[in-house]
Length: 98
Image 1 (cartoon, rainbow, N blue to C red):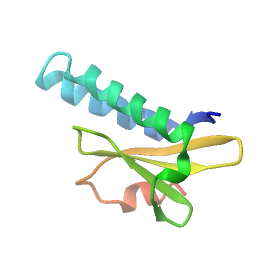
Image 2: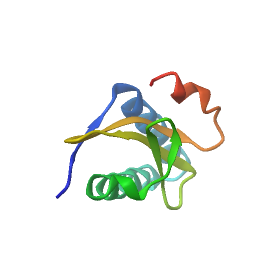
Image 3: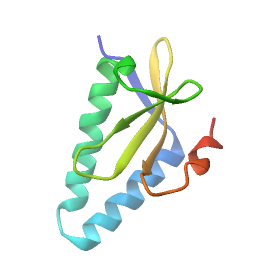
């Protein structure tokens, strides 16, 4: 059974920013980034406990091919995505969202 996935506004904005950045570099790369995010979200929805806890109750799933992590909180009936964050950025930015 897959849980529903709720993506917070900040995470949506991060995904859009990354999409634009990759798409500006190579046409189609932004779409590949979004496909990678989608694949990770499917895995998270199926089995959220597969991914490590990185801060209190927040877990992180890493994207393949792209240096991004999806930070999320599993709840009984849903997954709440807090951030889609580049690995080189300061983690304190997404930690403030908790």
